[in-house]
Length: 129
Image 1 (cartoon, rainbow, N blue to C red):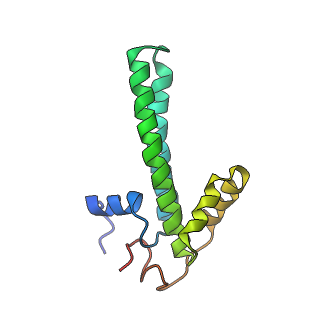
Image 2 (cartoon, rainbow, N blue to C red):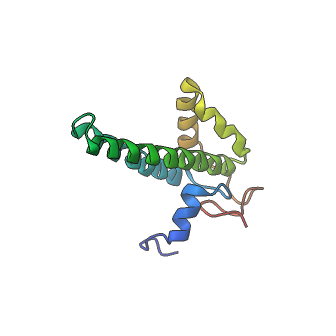
């Protein structure tokens, strides 16, 4: 596999919006980092404009849209990370429990996935077959 090529559009759609398959620790962390940046940029821009201005309203709307999209992406990434650990994706709901979510994030970032195929896919960083 050529590691220097950019991902295809379909790969990015799968990574951030579809729950099938598995992702590695690195893909989970880097995908989550990208999602956080997508959230942070409109929030940052919102803080730079005058409160109540049309620009303020525009950036708050963009932030809302980015937040909703990134919320789904965070869930999808967690589900696929859990799949790599051979755990059911429904456990991703733990990410909504305030203190537990930090521990769950660390577990998903630090624990290695199951080597080889499992019930969620033949290999890591790919959709289920």
